[in-house]
Length: 120
Image 1 (tube, helix red, strand yellow):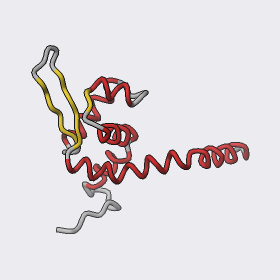
Image 2 (image 1 turned 180 degrees about the horizontal axis):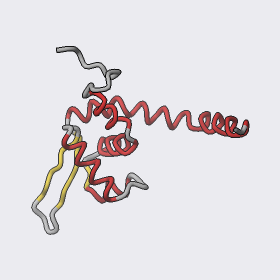
Image 3 (image 1 turned 30 degrees about the horizontal axis):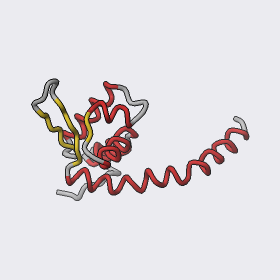
Image 4 (image 1 turned 90 degrees about the horizontal axis):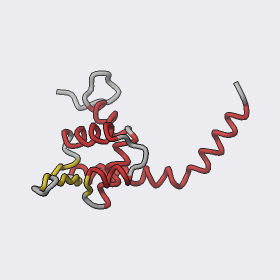
């Protein structure tokens, strides 16, 4: 068996990279790293995510072993999401990316404006 090579079309690591590159994954993992959160708290924390996309992304993250879904027998039922150790290790990698985007958004916006000003 060969070592995983994401440059090969059929390498399964491409599925992982696709998940990690998704903006909702980055935002949800970094939000849940703050503290375990309920569905609606996540929806409020991550503005712009639809209920459907939030649900799909959380299911995918749970399937990948990055978050846990805990159900508490309350009325109504309470569901809480938290990072797994694997998810925490990924979040430690993503947090600097999120920080980089905050630190460099002005430079990126300036570059975009210069590019757009050049026209077609």
